[in-house]
Image (tube, rainbow, N blue to C red; front, top):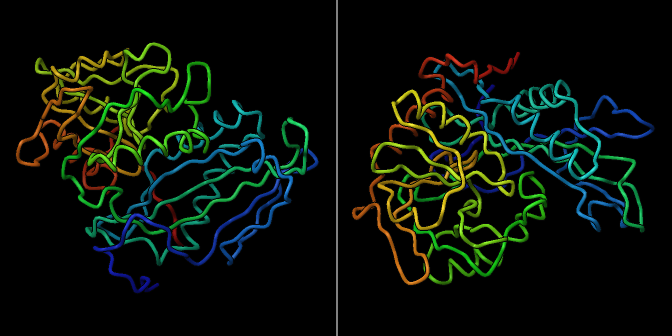
Length: 342
């Protein structure tokens, strides 16, 4: 099958309609078999719980083309588990792991001509989305659910690619509270952070770095991604908090960091520690790794890269992870699966 007619090396990280998406509905205690939908709109009751009470959660993962034109997906089982965890926390019906994986396989096969070519720097982004759709006015869980999964070809999340970004420590706006839903992938977390990101960009920064909502002493995460730092004595340190989304990318980087001889520490990370790091980065499915040029905290700025270059440890971690994702390096952990296209 011929590829879609796109300028693959210049596509942005934005939505583009593909050949269709999949929809599954839960009612009367069971999921249906799902249908292919060519349109890219959905119809919802005006009283649906997802619209009024935030009963919705989602995932994000990428499919890459290998050197032999095979479709490769990274740690899909972890995405399935994380969506199930999000659903449980806000009292939604879980999507079974087999159904989740099968839906993505079917979707990728349906939209195979939109998988960017190997070496283009782009990927096919997959967005599974779970919505409460029962028309309910009182505050209570839905009894019916819509699970849909769509795809779109994307370029890098940050248009500058691996060019380091500037972060601003945010102290007046909280993304999530302890005991809340910061550790699951629900839309409300991102809505809560829009003000902070908008403010940071107005001030000339690329993103924010949140502190814990309770004491304002510890780093939580960046706007769209987890945060990690490389210490001067060879440690990979990343914050531990019950308000942080458990990043599958971060989980994988910690394994690779240990392979590289770094001591890995996932622990509460005081904000003052930013001044003792030699490198810092943001990590997540969308960006993979985005190196940090500088962090401004109150009236002080620490700079990690004077020449807008990625640090050597971040660079090696990025290259190791992307080589596995693209099928160019040994996958001894079984992270990558090939999606059958025939």
